[in-house]
Amino acid sequence: MNKLLLALSLGFASLPTSVFAGPSEEMTEIRGDKPVVLRADRAYFLFRSESGVSPVFLRIPTEAEMRAYDAAKREAFAKAEPEMTKRRESMIAAGKDGKTIPPVPTLENFNFVWDGVQNAQTVNMGRALEKTGKVKTLLIEALPGNYVIYGLGYGNIFQTCFCLGSVSFPAKPGEIADLGTLLVSSASAQSDEPELKAETGFGPSMNGHLVTWAAAIRPATPSTPAPVMLAGKPIARAGYRAVGKFVAGFSFAINRLAPIPGVLGYDRGNVLDLIENRIAPNQY
Amino acid sequence: MRILAFAALIAAGFPSAALAQTLPVAPDPATVSVPDLSGSAAPDVVANGWKYFFFQREGVSFTEAHADIADCFRFLTPNDWGTVKLGRFVPWESRNGVKADYSPNPYGLVGVLMLAMIEGTLTRRDYQAKMRRCMETRGYTRYGVSEEIWENVTNLPRDQSIAVQAKIASGPSFGGKVPVK
Image (cartoon, rainbow over all chains, first blue to last red; front, side, top):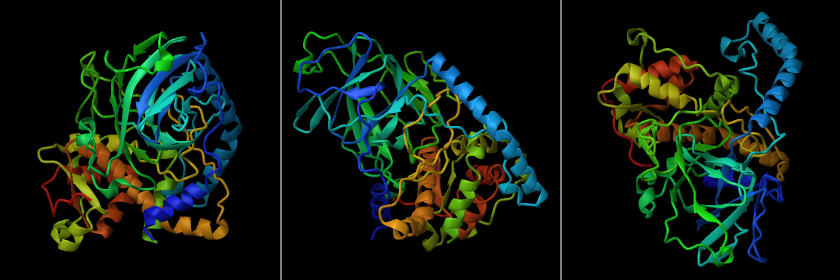
């Protein structure tokens, strides 16, 4: 059996029965089985896609959340540091190979993961507001804030990060941001979508544990139809801004969101903010 | 087995290496030795080039190539099915940690062993796919090298590996271009 298929079978088989979390405070899909009522304390975004793969939406943390994270990290480091130092010293004393000896433990290099707030989420692409042919329209209810299209995933699996460049958008309370249409293809096969032609066709070596995904956003225009169920609701086209490179470190693959005319471009390794006409700052 | 060793080796360097923010300073290129790449045009090396390759770009300086490769090395944290879970806080402006969260394999020990057997190959493929997206978008081209040379260079300590790959990337083209595969 092909190694990739075998890995996929074994890997996916080891996932929990349901890889989708239930509705959360952070983000939930609004179905079209009853009238849509917008909450004043929630933001909404709308997008169309034919893919079963979901965007990973990252809500940029608030200052209060960062303070809570920093405090939790400091506390965990203070608890772990004596043992890490002791272990390192014993490895040095035992004459271990220098490559295996960890660096001096610091708060900066401390490996810490916090789950007090879960601000990076996929959505269940099967829970559409409406479906016309192959095209699903999803309406997402989420905490207000600034969001980054962080990558693509399925359930709780982070498959491809857009670490090499992406976009952010504001999500305002009581309003619907129309994100446009999400186009998704494997990076290995050549896509027919104009936006993805230069971002795909790289051959099967782009696939490791999983497919490396390529994606493009086709922004909404004044003629982009909104779902009938949202007639009269406050819908505005998403205010996209380019986001520079960032390190996620917990996805199988990396890629970049395809260029968006007037918003997102690239010059070799640099991400271009085409609204400000400058290089978008990296998040590292 | 060597591939499995490669996976173990690069995994051993993380997460501490991945969490380190500092990039290596480019050394004097005259102090960097590169392996003999004269056998890279051999048909079997070119045919296997999609598995084992290094990058090269005409006209790039050693300093620029070093900066490009060092930047791309930021993204190489190896992952497996236990470390790619989203149920976590992402601090955005500071570095994520690495957490393993494994579910029991429904195929038991057999499933665990089978997964372990192919894990090294998949880790290498993830590594190569990441390097391709990061380097090819900067105008670099892949050239095949022998498996032995590739392993020797990629198994070097991070800073040395970056320096050797930067010298190769900024040197003359070698061997055959890797076919799209």
